[in-house]
Image 1 (cartoon, rainbow, N blue to C red):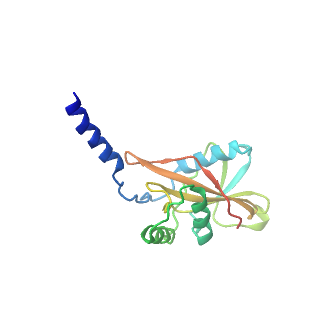
Image 2: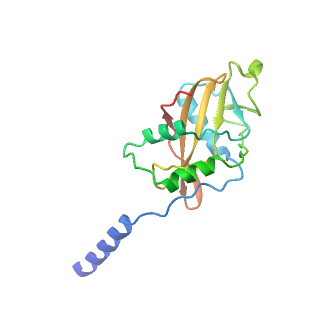
Image 3: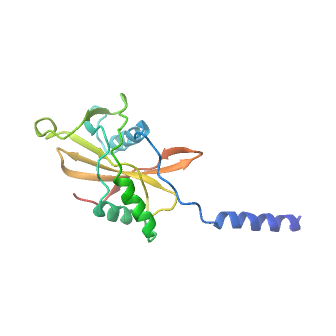
Amino acid sequence: MRKIALPALLLLAACASSTPAPLKTPEWTDVPRTVLDAFCLRTVNEGISRETAIHVYKVTRPLVTGASIAALHDLYPDRRKPDMESLTLAQEQSARAPLPVVIPAEGCKWRPIERYEGPRDHDAELLELSAPIVNPFSRGEAGLFARLSIGNQAPSWYWIPLGNHNERWMVGRILPMDLRN
C-alpha cells in the first residue's frame, strides 16, 4: 500500500504546485446580465432599495486608469508584483471599443442611459462599468471596475472579480475600492 501511496502523493503535490496558465479575459460581445444581477445584490446589501432607480450606461466606460489599477493593487494583501505583460494586457483590454451592457428587466430598477444629462441625472444613482480586464495582481482572475455615483459626484468604486469555471464566467464577491475620483 505504501508503494502506491507515495507516488500518488508526489503526483498530487506536483500538480498542485504547478503554475496555472495565464488567464485571458472573457471574450464577450457584451457584458452579461449576471454582472448587473450581482451588483444589484451588492447595492441591496448596502441599503439601497431595489425600487431606487439606478441609471446605468448602456456601454462600458473607460474606467481603467493608473489610479484604478493602483486601488486594485491595494485590494490584494499578498501584493503580487505584476509583470509588465499583464499590465500591458490590462491597458490594451481597456482600450478596446466599448461593449454593450445587458440590462436586466428585473432585480434592481435599472434605467439605461447613453450619456450623462445634468437636468435628468443630477441627483440619480449613476453606474458605470468597465470592460473586463485580467487582474494583474491575482493569478487566475479577471474582472471589471464599477463606479457608482450620485449625479456624477462622490463616487464609490468597486472591483467585480470574474473567474472561469468549466468555460463559464462567474462573478465573485464584489469588493469596494479606496478610490476617490
